[in-house]
Image 1 (cartoon, rainbow, N blue to C red):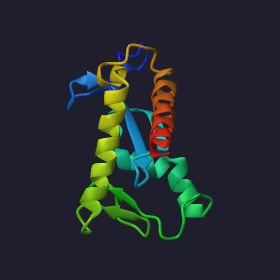
Image 2 (tube, rainbow, N blue to C red; image 1 turned 60 degrees about the vertical axis):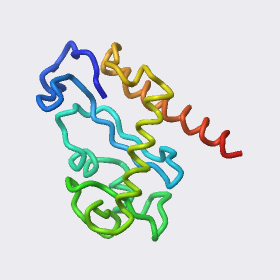
Image 3 (tube, rainbow, N blue to C red; image 1 turned 90 degrees about the horizontal axis):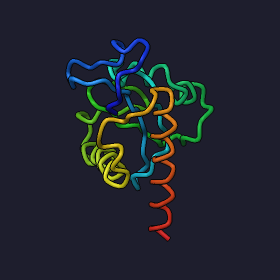
Image 4 (cartoon, one colour; image 1 turned 30 degrees about the horizontal axis):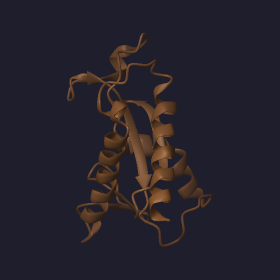
Length: 147
């Protein structure tokens, strides 16, 4: 997620690949495209697999202290290590379709909350609250459309 240059430690947030300052948004969505987990706050220079390894979701899965059932699988891209609960999108038939659900959810939330499509011009400490609030509102909207 593109952000304005933070006043402190700005270089940690600069992505040479994207030529912009940003925060990494790591999330999980269910089969309906609703956000069920979101980790926002790491600089965009930190890769998804490192964020996942340090996440509460990973810790809860490892210790069995999570809402995830025994048949639950997370689908990640090639940056993630395959495990009992992590399927890499290149490894199984149908997982590419599941990754499409994630990409579609990101596209839909950015379309619904257009402010997310451009650089977010607020303090870096406020951005995670903004993004998570948009995800909650997005889920509520999806829930209301399903009823």
